[in-house]
Amino acid sequence: MQATSYTYDSETRAGSVLLDDGTPVEFDAAAFDAGGLRLLRPGQRVRIETEGKGASLRITLVTLQTL
Image (cartoon, rainbow, N blue to C red; front, side, top):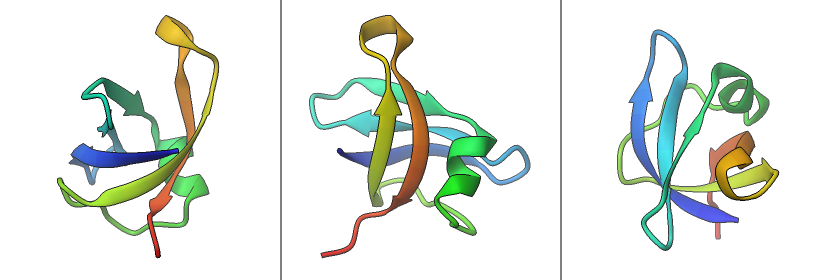
Protein backbone atom coordinates (compact mmCIF):
# COMPACT_ATOMS: atom_id res chain seq x y z
CA MET A 1 0.00 0.00 0.00
CA GLN A 2 1.19 3.54 -0.65
CA ALA A 3 0.87 6.61 1.56
CA THR A 4 2.38 10.04 2.10
CA SER A 5 4.63 10.83 5.05
CA TYR A 6 2.85 13.30 7.34
CA THR A 7 4.84 13.51 10.59
CA TYR A 8 8.11 12.06 11.83
CA ASP A 9 10.04 12.47 15.10
CA SER A 10 13.71 11.57 14.67
CA GLU A 11 14.18 11.06 18.43
CA THR A 12 11.44 8.45 18.81
CA ARG A 13 11.53 7.26 15.15
CA ALA A 14 7.73 7.30 15.18
CA GLY A 15 5.28 9.33 13.13
CA SER A 16 2.29 9.13 10.87
CA VAL A 17 1.33 8.83 7.23
CA LEU A 18 -1.71 9.88 5.27
CA LEU A 19 -3.43 7.19 3.25
CA ASP A 20 -4.58 8.17 -0.23
CA ASP A 21 -8.08 8.84 1.13
CA GLY A 22 -6.61 11.33 3.66
CA THR A 23 -6.84 9.04 6.69
CA PRO A 24 -3.92 9.53 9.09
CA VAL A 25 -2.32 6.35 10.46
CA GLU A 26 0.47 6.35 13.05
CA PHE A 27 3.55 4.13 12.99
CA ASP A 28 5.99 3.23 15.76
CA ALA A 29 9.78 2.85 15.83
CA ALA A 30 9.56 -0.88 15.06
CA ALA A 31 7.75 -0.20 11.76
CA PHE A 32 10.22 2.54 10.86
CA ASP A 33 13.24 0.36 11.71
CA ALA A 34 11.83 -2.55 9.66
CA GLY A 35 12.06 -0.39 6.53
CA GLY A 36 15.75 0.42 6.99
CA LEU A 37 15.28 4.17 6.67
CA ARG A 38 17.47 6.80 8.34
CA LEU A 39 14.97 9.66 8.27
CA LEU A 40 11.66 10.65 6.74
CA ARG A 41 10.48 14.02 5.51
CA PRO A 42 6.85 15.19 5.34
CA GLY A 43 5.44 14.79 1.85
CA GLN A 44 7.57 11.83 0.80
CA ARG A 45 5.71 8.95 -0.83
CA VAL A 46 6.20 5.77 1.14
CA ARG A 47 5.26 2.13 0.85
CA ILE A 48 3.67 0.66 3.95
CA GLU A 49 2.65 -2.79 5.07
CA THR A 50 -0.22 -3.08 7.52
CA GLU A 51 -2.08 -5.49 9.76
CA GLY A 52 -5.70 -5.31 10.85
CA LYS A 53 -8.54 -3.14 9.62
CA GLY A 54 -10.48 -0.10 10.70
CA ALA A 55 -9.63 1.15 14.18
CA SER A 56 -7.13 -1.71 14.69
CA LEU A 57 -5.11 -0.88 11.53
CA ARG A 58 -1.41 -0.99 12.39
CA ILE A 59 1.60 -0.21 10.21
CA THR A 60 4.31 -2.89 10.37
CA LEU A 61 6.75 -1.46 7.79
CA VAL A 62 7.54 1.97 6.32
CA THR A 63 9.94 2.33 3.41
CA LEU A 64 10.41 4.75 0.51
CA GLN A 65 8.28 4.25 -2.56
CA THR A 66 10.53 3.60 -5.55
CA LEU A 67 9.43 3.41 -9.15
